[in-house]
Length: 467
Ligand code: HEM
View 1: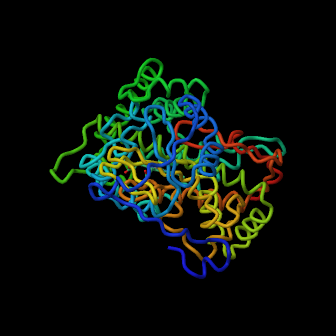
View 2: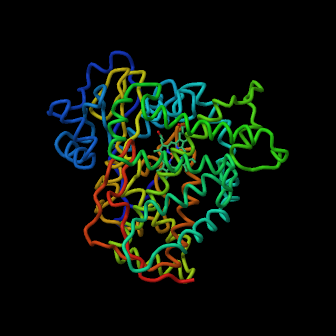
View 3: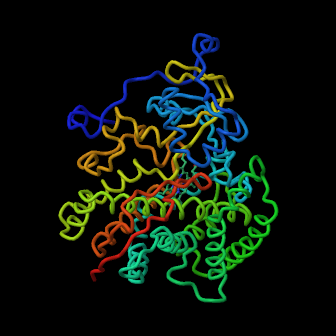
């Protein structure tokens, strides 16, 4: 929640109230429908997919804070008011199930995983996974994240430009392999874990190629993978099932703290254990949802820092002296996730008529929240396009105003892990590295699947490295 002092210093403000939530039968008649974007359907779909930022900012300017656009398969309402966000996050699962039930990841992870399931099935999977992602469980990983970071930054070239995103991914992949599969450092050749790591790297590399967009379009609305994706997945599956089988037989299963081992021992309220197929789906969700997102959020942090001298200097000074370091690192991460949210849009499908300010939408409407637009509201964040970590010194972000991890019962399960990773990596890099932008022009955002990433992978030049 923002307070009067927050508003007074001109760094964080408050939005005027706007009524939102389920409507009584008949109440919809008195409200107008959200304005539609007056462009042909195909033009909207293509522009949204390629230039989401320009598209949504223009729509908001021309149509207002709630508008209706054409998605690939249906009309979708977009809102950017925190009160509307609150109404959707606090609704019961039956009133506003998540649109991730229709996610492009469905052909890969099936319909029963924590990400793609809705209703009781979702709650069951979420309850099973939650203990592994609690703050305490995550604290145990800090040491390992730090070791993976130091190993990685020691390898970077001095004096020649390189992209940070793949380097960040190497760290977050190490963290995922250790946290999820319990494999620390480089797995030995010939082991199922080594095969799995290789396959995951290949899968992520393949998803970054331009043809991946076409594959994704071909899979819209499908529940099963086809063609090259099917073939690639079969290879990943072989490795995942081999790792699961080896772990089931492990004599130290009871003592292991990695997520796979915890899941192998977990039982539902009815006393059931997860099948290999269910385990495989959850593990792939965690790898896919967890490693690229965190890596790109870190890449954005540096893309912004090397172009914002005040913020950069303040971070380096704090990290190197230790004075106020924790707070400065946190503020830098929060401001990065405000100004460059890696997932820019999330959604729910309302199952009752819903009010969104002066507009109303019928039951069955897909209502999305543009994280990007919420985070760039002038009333919430004065001079929203400026990167100013100071907004967050001495202040916590508001639950419905800062939403890079979504919210409610679908809030990102890995948020604590993602924050821990970003804290450790950002602090270590600030302490040890003098980085510069290779080009003063800001990097454009590239939209890949549901993510928004720096187009050149946050290209930098490393001037010097301290021990
Ligand atoms: C900076 C990094 C990350 C960002 C920005 C991010 C963002 C998000 C967002 C926006 C959602 C949807 C929330 C909603 O609809 O309300 C989500 C869901 C999810 N995320 Fe993350 N995420 C990150 C890292 C991770 C990590 C590290 C993991 C796990 C290892 C993870 C696992 C998940 C899962 C399992 C869900 C589905 C939760 C559910 O539907 O109950 N994420 N994430």
